[in-house]
Length: 181
Image 1: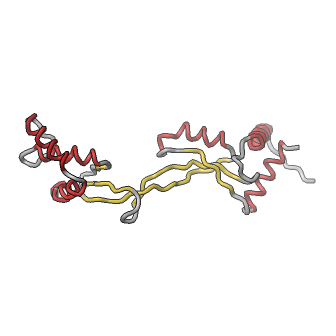
Image 2 (image 1 turned 120 degrees about the vertical axis):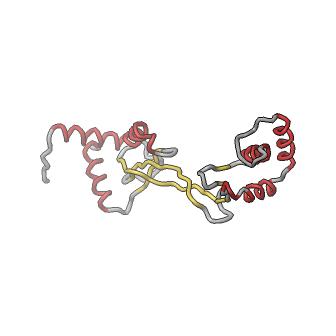
Image 3 (image 1 turned 90 degrees about the vertical axis):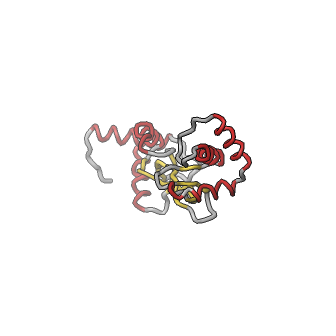
């Protein structure tokens, strides 16, 4: 048997980590090795017909729902000069709302495409999951998310099984062995 010398501080930290690893919920995943990662939900481009259709323009604006499309089209129709946000005439607003309410989705899309100066076009977006960082414990991962949540989009602590990885298996065997008698 070989011995490894470590400082008291290192020994205490490794023992604390080992105890936390042994005691934590493995979420029905085969015991070691597994790591916890920050998983984010991010929007990405999708192939035509896939995902959600979103209308965007050259100025960075987007319309996600039919209601948002209707509101935009109503604002445009109300403005006799074709500029947005000049809705002063209440009667014009009522007429425009009635007209827009009658329009179907295809007509709304056609109207958006006709607004060449605003550069509207439809894009398809989907969702992808991205994984960041790696932790031995759920506790450490959640603490990281809590203190860094503003850097992530919809962060959650996600468990990854990393079996058939000899290096990780070795590290886990060592860490588990510290506190497991």
